[in-house]
Length: 325
Image (tube, one colour):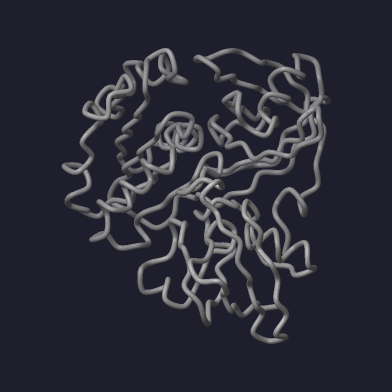
């Protein structure tokens, strides 16, 4: 199985808006050039977008899923990134056409909770905004959004989420770059009370939420890693070897290369989607070796004999895994 960008057909959509909505954050609106309805999407879904320079990037849809005439994404221009966001912002303009996949969702509203708790950090607001729009439009289950950013000027959709209709439903907090001014989430997460949590943002925020929800039912806590950041930088990576149990084949995994990438280069196909350790698609059996787990999916018990190959690495010189090929 390949990623959504490999298996979903791309269609050309027309850029009808490209607006600055916060420092370094841009809102892009896309429609069908012939005015046709777009493929339906559910809250939390993303699309793959091919930039003018040919890179393919995932962006969450942030408009109301009830709108079938347009897709809206928000893109943070990353100066130090690999160039995808810069190409999309710098090389696109209203009237251009971009190749976009059908929507895919690894971050769905699931189950039947008593209420929803949404925790968004920075640009991680985008998939959660779609959920908020959906619940607000349909009169669904009660929700509370905690939106955490550094400065008001860096807060996408600030005016929209400050509107009267969200009073009592949205808390917006700015820490102004001071860790001592971070929002205290523990009173919110101390007692589950039948809620489901959806958290999207920087890895540090999601790890903090995971640490504070160890007493929650695992199926009630959901993460999406916006941008695919990892808990350790690639500068800290060390090379190791992955050995396939069934064939004995030894595959080197260099520093800065994921197990998933190394497997694919050597002709082995593993299901994957998010490539950030948050969706669970690439869960693989671990038979021998000590893994360095960097995911936000596996429980401590599951980490004894499984690994998420898109982000995790090895403390030992070799891992033995069992691919379901």
